[in-house]
Amino acid sequence: MTDTNVFQLSQPGTFADPLTEVLRGGARALLAHAVEAEVAAFLNGQADKLTDDGRQRIVRHGHLPEREIMTGIGPVAVRCPRVRDRVVTGGERIRFSSTILPPYARRSKSLEVLIPILYLKGISTGDFEEALLALLGKEAGGLSASTIARLKDAWSDEHARWRKRDLSAKRYVYFWVDGIHVQARLEDDAQCLLVIIGATPEGKKELVGLIDGVRESAQSWKELLLDLKRRGLSMGPGLAVADGALGFWKAVEEVWPKIRGQRCWVHKTANILNKLPKSQQSKVKQALQEIWMAETKKDALEAFDAFIETWGIKYDKAVECLIKDRDALLAFYDFPAEHWKHLRTTNVIESSFATVRHRTVRSKGCLSNKTALAMIFKLAEAAEKSWRRLDGHNHLPKVVLGVKFTDGIEVVRSQAQAAAA
Image (cartoon, rainbow, N blue to C red; front, side):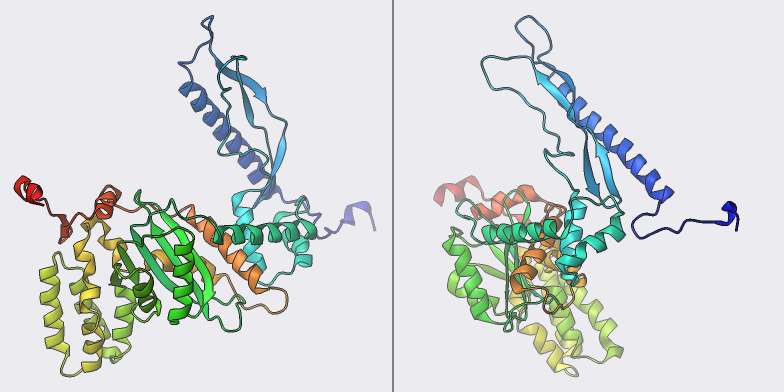
């Protein structure tokens, strides 16, 4: 056999992938351009600051030492620019901190999301090094079994601190509430995750509560609500959106009795269609949409009555399912029209936790309840960063102040009425 017929076999973790190298090179160049643009914008914003002798106060000052960031395509070498503040004495020194390359960051956020996903998939600590080696290549340093174990402990501690955080400075205008069924290992008597997402007066959506419990158990929901109240959330939201079957409604009446309730139209539609033959479901679904998509409450009530008249004789159980929550289904009309699409359903939770639900499977032995909740919390925390701000957020302070809305339009009182009040 000649030398030309001898080929060296690639061993696991030792193969060379030209495509990956091209991607890493492109990522390195793109990252460098992005950071340079970031520091240029920072310097431009400080251009009006001068020293006593008229020179520019904030100037470029080389780069920090090169470091590698572990990403989804393996390690990428980066150098973060450095700036210098020429004012040595007096005042506070101005510093540049990159939001793209945070100080001491060694792995990308996407990789931090990958680790809890793999854990929820049942990958044990000892198998992580091999799994990440296959995903990231042989240069996936710093992600050994001991590193993963430390990350897991750190995330569990982070989740525990989050569950004890002070809420006295918080105020939420709306709550979205739901019980999310996942296949990650929970306690024996727990059926699902109890999730609460809140909207702040600034329009930001935040994860407020996340525990394991029983979906329709009023006691489980009451424990969660009382815990929020004990930690400083003394005032409840103006409106809570949830499925009508939840024990949440009984619990919230005891904790925050003044909260208004809005039933989720997606859940209600599904419950009604389950009581009908398939041949009629498409027509009924369209008739229901005519109710909750009506422009005014009057139009919605007319469509409501038309639905009862059309379907009540033959499908009384379906109509009864709709009638029992009549007022709660139309509560959103008393809030700003810009918020209606956010308030008619619990999709805020459903869409946010779809990733968590689809990426968890039941694992036995290697995943404790504490670890499962911590990993789900990390995935939810990562998803929270991409949650969109509410439309019409400028109306939220008005809702907090008790301004009245009719058919989504602010009710403007005359000066005489205001004086009399």
